[in-house]
Length: 475
Image (cartoon, rainbow, N blue to C red; front, side):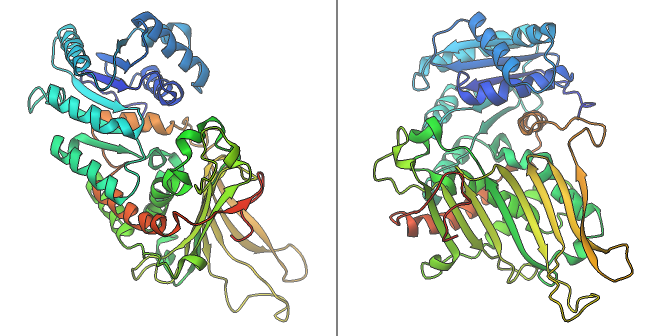
């Protein structure tokens, strides 16, 4: 990616620029692209929020954010150069006059560039603000491209995309009325993580695993997203959303789709997104009768005492569920999906368990030899791909031992520094590649599966588990 230069003049308008997302992710990611010489020579970053600060003060916010969260070396001259490309407008999202000010500012930038620039509108705001901002962008004419030949406009929307199937359909209907599909970039930044992207390369570029990537050879798949941290100061935001909406409907199901999808044949957004959507459409609904044996809802002890959490809240901070796909390749193979907060460790990984070899090629058939090849995609931390296999011990007997074959991203394994997920997202949006952004069909099929569970367990009491444990005993 470092050898790719984007040449067309581009302006990025960040709504909610003073928020945590801009500070921790967006500004450092843009700076990384700037430092590598990938951003256009003619580039501007326009921050928009309600905070009453000046352009100079916003530049300091940008510089401080990069200094705090940028993973590389941020030299002072580079830092000052990037911060100087930023501007700022104060106003509320409801105030239509503010959108007129944005329009005037963008016209001034185009005059400075001497050409109509591309416009990228990033909604780094809570979902409750989406409708207001989108309607005002449309009403003000800001989303109308300059012409068919230059000056595209695009909108980036963070997850969660709705809170259930009904609200997702409503938001999608609004987007469909205001924008063309090629203008809409729905973000699930997990799709941009290097290890998840590599699942497809690993499967479809190597002939080793694809012939056995089916129910004849695979026993089960486990996808885990564990966090040691609790909800901390985010109780007011998290309560009512819960783990299943927060990471189950998007991150975990997207990992599942990457593992289970069919070969897209061609490396393009249309084919890949269609194959992911096909997998999600084949998720078998969990009936009310099956819930007891297929789903566990948990809440860590002390959650009700967190700031902003209702005293009688039934919001889950943990879930574990068993999903199945209705297709020939994966018939009967359980996908165990699990996530939670305040657990014993923080990790994100997907494990593919291959069926045990029978009969066992063992020295002592009368003994029980439980052995299984396991392929692990470690997404975070220690990003790697690991295969567990068995070999004979160097000895006079035929005893075997377990070994691991591992490829690690850390330590600059391929001579390149691994790009941050948001760096990849921003780059792809600027060049117009929607591969790592979810399509309408993906969003709807995933919400259809998750909403059926939410409707059954909304009033169900969660199983209580201790902080620092592995979750509820019932799991």
